Length: 121
Length: 107
Picture (cartoon, each protein chain N blue to C red):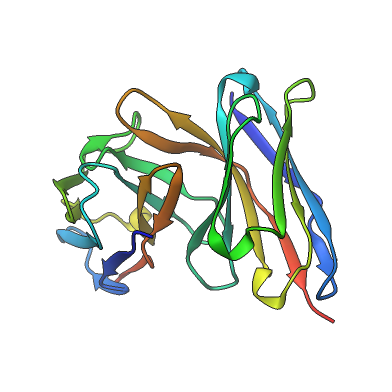
């Protein structure tokens, strides 16, 4: 059974940093791209970042470029999102998801339960 | 960046009704369009991929259609367990955008 479990969320002051993690199990982690998607309270979904199977390619939404960094440790079956220079508008539930890139379509097919990051003084 | 315009933002319907949600892309995305369901307090769940393909295990009352810039998601006969918010998602060049969501309620 595929499982994704996020952790590391919490309260952080504006301008601060936080790293959230995602522990993966039930599939060969190193064979899949992975992604982070966030959801501000009461709002819709926003894609944040993607990372290739071996970590060699990373892509970000414009609003987090230069502040957030996605990474992975395939030996530990773990995905990370390092968030720096945090702003109030980064307050959201952060979901990790498996990003299945198949022959002619791509999907976020399994999702974690999310971890809440609150940026406030 | 490709923008996705989803409508309506909310919808109230009766059990057994046919429900339709639309999503319009700001440029041609061929079939690069998925639909997700999100129930309150839960993670999103993939329902439809590649515009019209039903994910394994998803009831056949859910369907999707469209290509290019205009897409439609349909529930043929609304059930009480379908109460949720539905999102379209486009993917292009290793980035992605979601529609604003449609909150579906029972009348």
